[in-house]
Structure formats: structure tokens, C-alpha cells
Image (tube, rainbow, N blue to C red; front, side, top):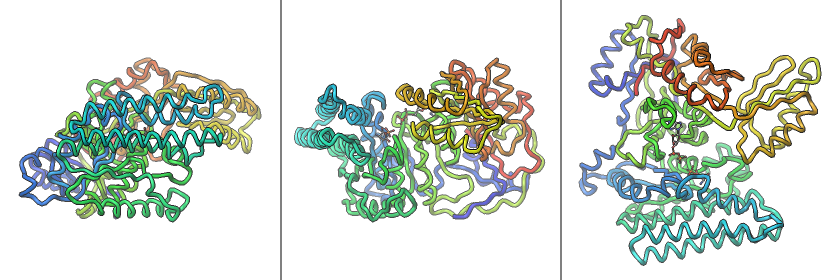
Length: 571
Ligand SMILES: Nc1ncnc2c1ncn2[C@@H]1O[C@H](COP(=O)(O)OP(=O)(O)O)[C@@H](O)[C@H]1O
Ligand SMILES: N[C@@H](CC(=O)OP(=O)(O)O)C(=O)O
């Protein structure tokens, strides 16, 4: 994989879609630079609309497309998944489906959360049968769903039998944990796997019921000792080749429906990867079969310039880089698990975020700007930087890609009881945070002060209290609750002077107080902490002044004199 650090210009989509070649040439001639258009279907794939026009009998099917469905999508839109997504794509490409555990409404009340809650209470001395209530809810939910959705009596009966069997396996593990008096990370992983098994048993049954031949694939025992004891390159390589072996063994007329849970991993899945592990599982399947595309199906059209629920004029982005997707996910726009990208991008497989409720939409592609996609050459090095730009182009230069916000933030200030920050002071703070498993999202230090923005959910409040008590040994501790982090994200921000100033001036104009400021070394994220009640106001102001209309708003943002990477506004 070769990359190039030289200038690039992506044409605005309007231009690129009309006459990509002629426009590229014109632009290259005009500005002596290399133009990269970003037409989303210029590689070996058919769009769902195209595939409607071709008959499977007439066209040989192309490469693998891996489709990941989240728990709420499986819970709310299983029929759409079967008829409008899997069936359609299966006509043109080989499709494998990867699902996470069902959630009928929200993830917090979904199957994984119920399984984790059952493991949480199983050791409670007060009520040693409480865990069974969670299992009962899971049973009722899945059996009712099977009865409602599966028409064929034979398929339905088998699904209900398999459902009871899997829940009984989880019950046995919980019961054993109760007797031993411990739930080890490995046991917790095994209990958690029940969610993805139930969900995939259901989706495989539903596809078969609707005439799409499918086969359930259980990955819960796929990891063996030879994979190693750490989640490193060797582990991922071993897992990907094992997955290839498993998927290749399936009859090519069938759609593999793969559990989005890939076994008990070193240190435990929750510790090592965390919630949302199914994205990574789908990525590893994509790498294993060398897929043409990894599709992450959600209930949103793709990645927007801001959360569309909070900013009404947020626009859909045609593409973002993996770095941008990571930052957005980490700072509040949970579009994809950050671990997903590394393995797939290394294999030059693009990731597309798509909407189950709008399957023909193009979605958002996550891919680096300067790496050729699978089956394509790496884009050549552009020769020169863009020097003089006409205002029509200048006005289209992007400032930031998106703005995002993360709530449940608590700011902890520690005023050292020594005159200066002594040796070991930070180490003490971090080991205390580590002990209580609290994560620092932002940090800033001065001579005697350390300020940290911590992500603390309601359930972690007890941990915060214990942490603060311990931190008091090192100085005076002050805690401010109900805060939020607002982040401006974009890879091209490093080409701009004044972008941070513009962000803070915009907040000041709205009379929003800033508690903390931080800019990451990668220069693609500028974050600050504000009061949580100001979040929507801040997002809208930053979106309209900096993202939608930056240069006309007199924010004094300029290009650096030496532009090495340039991207035009394209939505
Ligand atoms: N920049 C963003 N682009 C798209 N969605 C965003 C963004 N920021 C926040 N969101 C929110 O993230 C959610 C992700 O979609 P959803 O399919 O509901 O998630 P999940 O797959 O976790 O169930 C959406 O509800 C959307 O409002
Ligand atoms: N079911 C798991 C894994 C997962 O990825 O879920 P989802 O795709 O619904 O975010 C969880 O809740 O963490």
C-alpha cells in the first residue's frame, strides 16, 4: 500500500457526476494539479438500482459484499433487510450477512444489555433468581418475534426450539457462575454470545422463509489458542483466514448469516473491544473473504455534517476518511466502531454506511483519500500545489467535515498540593482513574493544575465518587457535572489558519462559556467543553458559520501558504 502526501483536489459531486473526465482534465490544466474525483461506484460493484435491472441468471455474480446489521435494525426492520437489501444485493454479488443481538426498541433495552444485566445480578446474595427474569424477557421477546415474523410452521418451530436451546445454554453458564461465585471475562463473553446467536438464527430463518436460501454460521468457537494471547496483527490474520475457510465451505447458493460475535478473545471481548464489537467482526469477515465492500447498515442515511436529529440543515457526506470516522465516533457520532477500519482499509476494502430504511441511497463511503481501492492503482502523485484559486473554487474549499457533541461529560480539576506538578503526580492520577476504569477524553495541564474531561454515564457515578475521594490525596479536587464536549473534525483543517479561533469566536458570539480547550496532535480535531444545555445551540452555530458558509461569514479563516492537501466542498 503506497500513500502520497501531495495535494489532491476532489471535485464537487455535481461536477464529478456530470462529466468526471472532461472536468478533471479542465481542472488539471487550469490549476496544474492532480484531480481526484470521488464517484462512489467506480469500482466493481452494482448499486441496488442497477441490480434491479439485471437478472441473476444473465449476470455472473461479482465479488463478496459483507452486510452488517445492528441490533435495532434487526429488531425493527427484519423484513426490509430480507427483501430490500439482502435479496437485491444477492442478485449481483455474493452476500454474507453479519448481525448483532436484537433490540426491539433501543440498544440499552436490547438483548446484549439484558444478558449483561443478568450476569451483573447473578452474584447478588439478596435475590439469587433475579438473573432468570432477564432471561425470561429475552425468551418472550424472541419467541413472540419468531411467531409473528416466520410464516412456515416448520421453520418457525425449529427457530423456537433453537431459541430455547441457546437461552438454556446461557442459563447454565449463569447458574455455574453463581455456584462458583465469579463471572470471569471468558464466561461473560460466552453469555453475551447468546444475543448474536439468537439474532442470526432468526435472520437465517427469515431469509429461508422468504425464499432466500441462507445458512446460519456460529462463530463463537472460532478462536483457538494458536491465535495468540493478544489482539495483534497475528491474531487478526489467523482469524481472517479461519473465517475464509468457514465461509468458503458454505454452498454458494446460500447466504451465510454470521454471528456478529467472534468468540472468546484474549482478555475478554468487552475489555478488549467493547460494545459494538459486531462492526469489527463484519470487518474481519470482509478481510477474510477479500470482499469488494463492507456495508454497515444503520437507521441513518450515512455520516452527516452534524447529527441530523440536532442540526436540521446537516448534510449527508459522500465520503469521509477513516481518521475522521474514528474521531466522529469517539466524540459522540457513533457511526462505526473505531477498531473496524484498520483491518479493512489495510486490505483496501471500502466501507459504506447505508440506511436500512432507504436502501437505494448511496450512503457514505469511508476510505482514505490517497489510497487506491481494491483492484485499482494507487492514485498517482499530484505534481504541484494549487497556488491561485478563483473565488468560485475558493468558496468551495472545505473547512471542517463535521461537528459533533458528546454528553455525559464531567470535568475534574485537580489543584496540586505541591508548588509545581511533582514527579509522579500525573502517574498517580492516571493509576487512580485506571483502577476505577474511568476514561479521560480531554486533558489540559498548567503549572499546578490538571483539568480532565471524563466520560461518566449515570451507571458510573459511583465510580466517579470513589475516584474523587482518592484523588483528594494529591490536591484539591473540584468536579463540574453536566458538561458536553463539542468537536470540530476534518482532515483538511490542518491546511487552514484561524479555524480554532473561528470556532471559539462563534461560541463567544452565542455567549457560550468554554470550560476547557484541546486540539489533538493530528490536527484533525479541535474540541472544547461547554455546559450540556448549550450543546444544540453550539452545534447549530458552528455548523452554519464554519461548515455551511465559512468564507462568507468573515471568520478570518485562511489557507496556509503551502497547501499540501485540498478538498472541495462536496455533499
Ligand atoms: N454526524 C452524524 N451522522 C450521522 N448520524 C449521526 C451523526 N451524529 C450523530 N448521529 C446519530 O447516530 C445515530 C446512528 O444511527 P443508528 O442506526 O440509530 O445507530 P445504531 O446502529 O447504533 O443503532 C443516528 O440516530 C444519528 O442521529
Ligand atoms: N450486540 C453487541 C454488539 C454490537 O455491535 O451491537 P450493535 O451493532 O447493535 O451496535 C452490543 O450491543 O454491543
